[in-house]
Length: 115
Length: 114
Image (cartoon, each protein chain N blue to C red):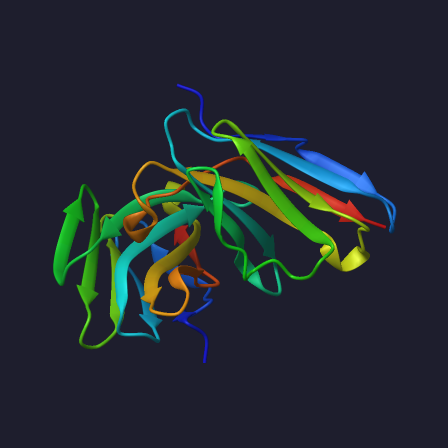
C-alpha cells in the first residue's frame, strides 16, 4: 500500500518565484497536515485539513503561504513570492483517526532551497 | 516556555543498554502523546502512541505517561545501533478557543555505540 506521496522531492528556486508543493495522502485518510522543518525551529505545523476543510491555519507564517485541498486525494502548498528564509524541508502527513488522537504518517518531504 | 520540551542531546548509550528519552509539555488539556523516530535525511516515523497514564509496551519500546507531572518518556531496551536517530515527542492539545493543536518537540538525538 502506497504511503503519503509528495512532489517534487527537491526544489531549487530563486527569490520571488512561485513554488507549489504537492501531496497525495494515504487512501482513506481524512486528515492532512503540512509541516515545515528547519534546524533552528524544528518541526512546525503549518495547516491541517479534516475532510478537505482547513481546520487550523494558525501556523501559516504569512500571506505568502496558501494551501488547498480540492479533493480527498490531493493537496497543494503554495509560496508566492518565495524568500530565502522559506528554505526548509516541507512534510505532508495524513491520518485516519480524528485529529484528537491522530497517528500521523509522513511523506518523504520536499527539500526547498530559495536562493 | 515552549509547549513541548525535550533535551536536544546528544544522548549516547552503549549497545544493549537502556536509552531513556524524556519530554515535558506545558498544558494540562493535552489528550494524546506520540513518539516519532527520524533518521537523518528521512521523514518522521511513528513508533508509539499513548493516551492514558501509565506504561505502554511495544517490543523493545515502552512509553510512560504521567499527566499530573506533564511528563512523557520513551524507554528503549537492548538498544541497537539501528536505533541511532532523532526522537521527536508530539502532543495533541485541545484548547477551547482554537480546538486541537499539535506540537512537536525539537527532538533528542540518540547514538547507540556498538
